[in-house]
Amino acid sequence: MSSHISASEPLQFETRAIHVGQEPDPATGAVITPIYQTSTYIQRAVGEHLGYDYSRTDNPTRTALQECLASLEGGRFGLAFASGMAAITTLLLHLKKGDHVVVADDVYGGTYRLFERVFTNFGLEFSFVDLTDPAATRAAFRPNTRLVWIETPTNPLLKIVDIAEISALAHERHILVGVDNTFATPYLQRPLALGADLVMHSTTKYLGGHSDVVGGAIVTSDAPLYEQLKFLQNAAGAVPSPFDCWLVLRGLKTLALRVERHSENALRLAQWLEHQARVKRVLYPGLASHPQHAVAQRQMISAHGAPAYGGMISFIAHGGKSAAEKIVAATKLFLLGESLGGVESLVEVPAAMTHMSVANSPLEVDPGLVRLSVGVEHVYDLMADLDQALESV
Ligand SMILES: *Cc1c(COP(=O)(O)O)cnc(C)c1O
Image 1 (cartoon, rainbow, N blue to C red):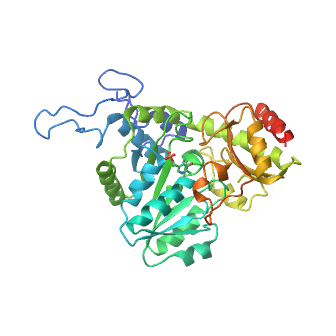
Image 2: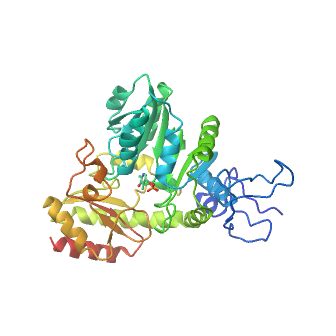
Image 3: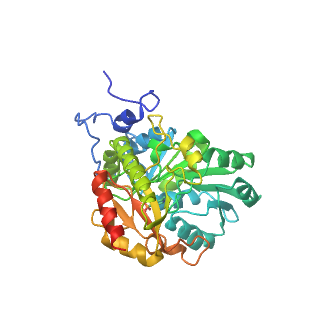
């Protein structure tokens, strides 16, 4: 009896997260995919090996992770990288001098920095556009546009971009569509099914889920694109260690459970925050007051078929920057720190922390904005913590 479970079997999301790419080790029966901590592999004769010759090129622990990630995103091919930025860098290496990229105007600060301060030196051109506006998006396309880079929900404003709509516009011009799916996770949003050509992740966040690993990934069903990216993964070499792959694999097993709880907790906190006198505005795609709530409702559908909106909330308190700084200094359970997507709740001020690299740019963030990564602690404890922090203002 074979225990191999292939990505093509019609299994549910939770089951695929635990089994795809992770059949018990054929040599020992180990149920958990081993950490193949090896750089090289024996060859019986020159060029005759078991599919592995050098760990930059391929490693069995990484293969397991890549197959599982591809399955969860509903794609044919997965590639794992040393970080989310390594994944994006490798993708951009397949473009050429003179190519143009249309980018969401509210993106991860590091993405903006990589595009504007690194890849412009290599002759790539970038336009930062409000992708929630189809007319503005269409107007930004040029004859040399090769890629549209979507983030949704965006970071830190949690705008929702209609992936199907932007993909259709881009495909009229044969422009590739990439989606940074880090905030939503494949449990809530499957961009390939909505028309995107590739999905990217910082697996550092929800996929790893425990704030103990840095990693990245790309998934696509486009075979020629995959071949190019696979070539570049090996050629540029920004690959994750076997141990890091193993940590992400372990995280994936509970992704569905965690994202359900992150989403439940965040919705309740967002609704509660909206009623707090000291809070001016709450940004959460699950609130009826969110400008793209309707898009979120049909785009962010859990693997169980119900809308859910993830664990990220941003809000602006009355009193701007100084109020924001007081709040984040006063929280006790919400730890002040960068990053997101772990089981523990985090709080930060994007303008002074994750988004410093967009200061004095058109993407500049309101200095009074507070961003929450809502964890899976009990919601009453989280609410009490925010309550006492707001009292401190
Ligand atoms: C963190 C993050 C990245 C960068 O990923 P790293 O793993 O930190 O390199 C990219 N996009 C989003 C949305 C992120 O949150």
